[in-house]
Structure formats: C-alpha cells, structure tokens
Image (tube, rainbow, N blue to C red):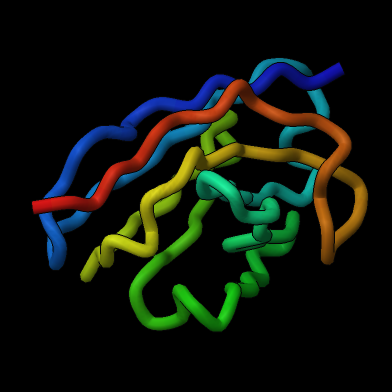
Length: 118
C-alpha cells in the first residue's frame, strides 16, 4: 500500500512558478513509477508528467518546456516544478504512483489546488 500527500498548491499570477511536492509512505516508492495528473473544472483528468524508477520522464505536450518532474528516492518524495504558468494550468493536481511506466495510476493522493490568475 502507498499513501500519497501533496503540498505546495496555491494562487499564482500568470508567468509565475510553483513547486508541488508529494510525500509517499510505504516501501514501494522506489520501485514505482510516479506521476502527476490534473483535472480542471468541466474537463477530463489529464496526465501531466511521469517519472520512472530509472529517472526517465515524459510530459504532456501542453506543459513541455515549462514543467519538470523529479524524484528523491531517499526521502520518498516526488516534485513538480511548474514555471511560466498560464491560466489554463488552473486545476487540481494529483500525485500518483503505479506499476505502469506510462499511466501510473494505482495509488492517488487527495489533490492540491493550483490557481493561475491575476
């Protein structure tokens, strides 16, 4: 079992930056692919970024060049550094952990709100 707790969300102006963190409990962290999904009001949930156990990353086209996912296996934490934020990045962001290297969605955090607005 893996438990995930996100932090770092909030209100930021367009063009600003935020860093989300996800603390994981359980012994599976270093063996699972980690990911970040997001869901905006009225829209389907979207996979934003993925990082495998070997450190390989993949991003949605909408965030490439602006977001960076990273992981700290020693501290069971995964991060999402978000830069050049746009209003369309506004969403609830979910940390996930899983066995698939493409869609790691076996375990979910509770979500953290990110609002990009002036």
